[in-house]
Structures are given as structure tokens and as C-alpha cells.
Image (cartoon, rainbow, N blue to C red; front, side, top):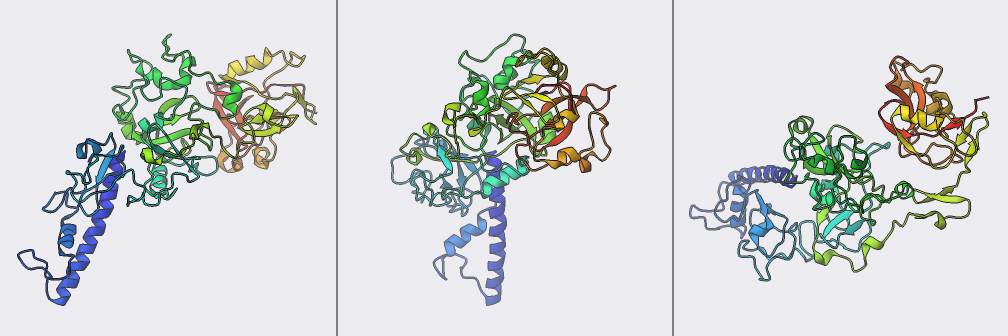
Length: 512
């Protein structure tokens, strides 16, 4: 939260000021005198008043000569001309830092509630992190409606396909220097909702109650069994298939209309201008203040794949990624319509943008597979795009019922068969787990290592790797609720649960 960040900043400033004061006292004692007499008149240089104020600044008491001391308040209480935002106390307690205030403040030359502060937050020459801000810089997008300035593309994706913890996400934004500004921060859940598109329930003003004013899922935002069912409206497009919604539908007829191909191309429920894997879950700095949320140190996040709002614990590395934000003004909006732009790294948006024989997968032109692919080992695979199927039993039935490419003897592949179409990651085959030896190895973490993040599915078969793939192999026939799956993003062989939702790529024939 913003106030928490302000408290951290204040703490650092307090330590620095206290240390400086101690050094100054020691120096004056050594020289045998104080530069000020008992009346407070300055008998030394012209910095006496400032030094006296700095000594008191940081004690959380507004002393004589101070406008504030370490606190923060709504910008509208400082000047009704502002429309929102939080102002922090300046490091020397002489006035308010209005850099994060929305709007332009009053038209007077001086804020009567902030003596000595003539800063105009709409002026790019404002000190304190805004002085060098370049609104035309690459790597940002300025929302013309909210004046929020977003890091674009997403900056911190973690390493090895795993995103950062919330604590590391917070540190990343606080240390970010981008477009000449150094006052970047982790967004609130309210701010993340401003860039949702196409999901009425989780867009700003939607029926999902999770917000800065509703952070406790045990009170204002109960899930599933809540008599008012508020929690369902936070499921985004996942609510369409939620088994607990009891016929309730909070979405409009215009929601969730993206096709499977659009979703594959990461045309997700977010402002089109956002680049850099925008569909992933994105951390907010809004805590989940429920009892369980506090215990887990959980924070709310927004997954733009479905416009879904949920919460994850800080310690769950890899749960979400990071997109930093800072507050701007109308003067920071570039003249061009940024929402109409596309990522310069995109090769395509639709298949027609690609050469003959290729199609568009995640905005890259890749080989367009034939209907099926027959491997050298004799297995014939369903090629191209395949369906995600929820639950293992349903995935097996899906393949057994499939009538495709003139054949009706399709089945869900076993683990050995699915491992055979992993391409480029030797660690997959080094993992000793197979259909013939399905038991979970005691040294699993050391013998079933993963490759770096990439795409290890044979190109002749397809390029869908954003979700794992089902196999028909269980790790224990007596516990068929736990089955083996493969993640083609990193080549990992792992056991999943029969209730999961994975891709089902069917196969026919037998291995040579």
C-alpha cells in the first residue's frame, strides 16, 4: 500500500537525518561552541534555521517552522483543485510533495496550505523524481483517462519462468528508473483494474468488490458460498464455467468474446497497448486483510488471461509478475493514440500476416502443422491447436471419443509417448519416470530437473505450451487422482491432480 511505502521512506529519512545530526553535534563540541545563541538567532552561516528544523524533522511531531512531519494525506485536503492522490511530507518537513497528486491543483501561484511550495505537478521540471521525465520515452504507456503511467512492456518476470515474490516485486519498482523518473511503485488493485478491458465485472466500477476499500475476503468479498455471491464476480471469465455459481451470471453479453486463437496470441483482457506477456497474473500492493490473508502475508493480483482477481502469498515465488506504475497528469499524455499501437516485436496478429505455410502463434509466424504428424517411432499425433480439458477422466474420454482426420481410434498418450515429442530439452528424457516406471522417485528434485524457459514441443506438432499436457499415466494405480503431466515450457515431468485443467493432445498407433 502507498502509506506503507511512505512509512518505509520516512524511516530511511529519519535514520539518515538522525545520523547527520549526531555528526553535526560532535563537530560543534570539538570546536568548543554552538553557532546559535539561546534566542535562536543565527550567528553563524545562513543555514541555522534549516539545520534546527532538520534536527526536529522526523520526530512525528509538527514543530515550529514545520508544515508536516513524516505523515501523508489526501491531495484534496491540501488543495481542492486536485482530484485525488496522496501527498507525502518533504524530507525536510517544509511542505508537501505533490508529485503524485492528480489534477493541477489551484490556479493560485502559491498553495495557502503548503507555504513555500510552488511546485506544479503538471510541470515536468518538478523535482523529486519527475525532473527528467520524458513522456515520449520508450518503455511506458500513459493512460489518457487516468493519467497513470505504466511500465510497458512488463519489466520483472523473474527467472527461469518463475516470477518474483511480492517483496522482490516491491523492491524492483522502488528501484526502477525509467523514462527519466525514479518514483515508480507497485500498483494498487484499483489501478490494475483500470487497464482491464472486456470483462465488465472486474473493470473499474464492476461488481467485483475487491478494491482498496474492500480488502478482506471474509467480509465484503466472500467467495462461492456467500449469500450475495459477490465473490463470483471477481472470477472474471472463469465465472462462466464455475461450478459454484448456481446459475448466477454477473457478466454482460459483451464479455469474454475473445476466440481461442486471440487468446493464444495473448490478445487478453487488457489494454491493447500493453506488451510483454500481458496475460500473466500481475502483483498489486493491496494486501488481503482477511485472517487467512494476513497469516500468509497475501496480496491481491489480477490475471488478465480471464480478468480474474485473486490473492497469493508473498512467499509463493513464480505466482505473479510485475508491471510498475507512477501517477502522471494530463500534460504527460502523448499526442498519439497509444492504445492503437502494437508491440514492435510482434511479427503478426492474424494468420494472414504470415508467409504461406505458417500461422500466427503468440504473435510469431511459425510452421503451420498438417492435421496429423507421424513420428519416426510410428506414433501418429493430433497436430495443430488442441483443446484444454478439465479433469483427467474427461481428457481420456475426449481422446477416445475424438473422430479426427479420418480416424476414431485416438487415445490420451502415456508418459513415455508424450516424452517422445519433447524437443530440445534433454533433461526431460533424463528424468527416470516413464509409463513403465511411474512411481514417484525419492530424489525427484535432483533427477527430474528442468530446462530454461522456452518452447520444447516439436514444431511439426504445434506450439501451444502455455499450459501443461495430460498423460494417461498415474504415479500410483491405487491413487489415480494423481497423474503425470509434462510442461513444455521448461520440459518438466511432474505429477498433477486429476481435477486439473490441461491440454489434451491425442495420439494413435504404437511405438516401434
